[in-house]
Image (tube, rainbow, N blue to C red; front, top):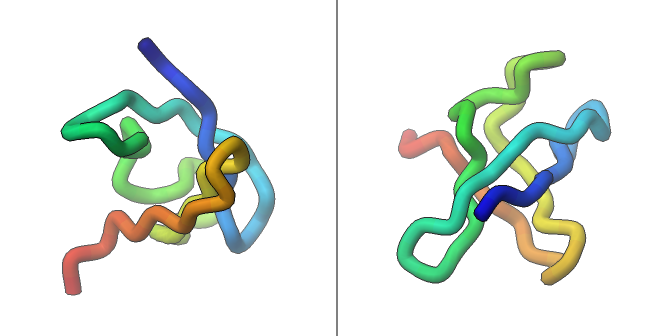
Length: 52
């Protein structure tokens, strides 16, 4: 199952997959601006992909 998550910086959408009960973006960075913070628009939840 796939879903879309929104980049918190530029608003572009990218695909995400369900892993361990949470949506995880397929790409670690937004393909448009390189940001690593996304928003699950259905759950109003922020997703961070940067481990730093």
